[in-house]
Length: 306
View 1 (cartoon, one colour):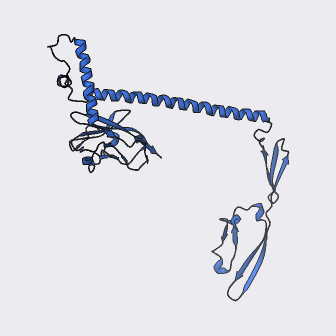
View 2: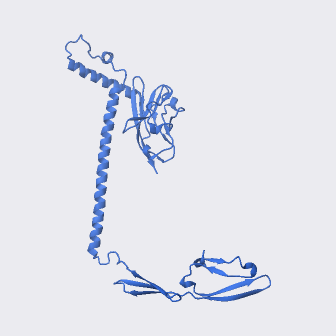
C-alpha cells in the first residue's frame, strides 16, 4: 500500500531464529487495526493475527465566522497540545457586482494605456532609426567615392569650368562641384547594386546563421571591398578586400565567429556566416560593397530568438 511506502522493515537479525517481527515507523491514526502475519513454503501454510491500537484524537471547536481551536490528544501517554486556527474569508466575499466590474474595467484600461505607450515608443524609435539610416547613407555617399574630380566630369557633360570663365564666382563653382559630385555618385550606384533577402532572417541562440547578400546583376566580387557592419553602431563585423579577410577593425564580440563565403564571390554572392549566435547578435546588419568608382549597400535584419 502507498500509505506504508518507506515506513516498514522486517527484522533481518532474527530471521535465522524464526523471528518475523515487522517494524512500522511514524505511526498514524489510520494505522490502527488488525494485521496478519502469513508464513508458507511449498507444502505448508500458517498465519497469526496481531491487533495494533493507535491512540490519539484531534478535536476542533469553534465556527467558520470565529476563531477555531484544535486539540491533539494522546490518551495513552496522557498528553495533549492545543493550536489556534484561522480560516481566511473568500476573496471578494462581500464584493458587490459593480465593484467586480469596476475592477475589471480598471485592469483593462491599464493594459490599454501600457500597450499604447509601448507602441508609441516603438514607432518613435523606428522613426529615429530610419532618419539615422538616411543620414548615414548620405554621409557615406559623400565620403567614400574616390574619383570625384569635377573638372573632367564637367568637360564630359559640356559644362564650363576653370579660370577661363570669370563669370563663375566662388559660390557658383562650389555649387557646380556639388552637382558634379552628385552626378558621379548616381552613376557609380547604378553600376554597382547590392541586394539583401528582403525579409528578416530568423535563427535561435546557439545556432549558426548565414546572412544573404548578392550583387545584381551578378558579377565577380573577388576584387571588390566588402564590409559587413552593425547598422546602429557602425562597427565592423567582417571586412574583406582583394581576396583577404582583414580583422584589424573587427568588433571583439565577433572575433573567430564570422566567415565570408568564398565559393560564391565569383558569382557575386556576399553571404556572411556567423557561428554560435547569442541574443546580442539580434539587429540590423549592413552589407557594403565598393570599388574605385562605385559604392552600394543593403540592409539585412537578423532576429535571434530563444
